[in-house]
Image (cartoon, one colour):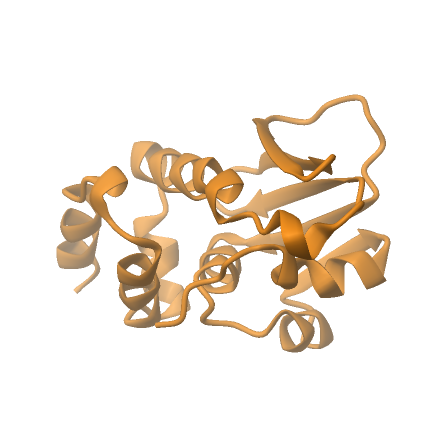
Length: 153
C-alpha cells in the first residue's frame, strides 16, 4: 500500500492541491505510511510546500502585535529545520536554522508534523503524549494554531 501512496503523492502537483485536499490525503494515512513515504526528494517537496504555504495561511488579525521566531525541527530520515518569523502582521518562512534565538522551538517527526499542519492532530494531545516536544515559550506554542487557517479534513 505504501508504494501506491508514495506514487500517488509523488505524482501530485502540490501547487494545485488545496489545503483541504492535502488534509484529506494525510487523514487517510497512518503514521507508518507517512514515514514510508516521507523520504528523499518527496520529503523535501512536501516540507517545502507546507512551509511555503504558511505565509498564505497566516491570519494577521489573530496575531495582532505578536513578534516571535518559531523554529520547527522535523525529524525523520534526517533532521530538517525551518523558521517562521511573525512580526508586523506578516509571517516569513525560511529554511534552515538562523543564529537568532527562537522564542519557541517545536520538535516532532514527519507524521506528527503533517498531521498537525493538516488539522488531523491536536497539539495539546501531541505535547502530552510526547509526540511534540517544545522548548522555550510553551504558551506561545500552545496557541500557534490560532494564527493560521488550519484545514479540516
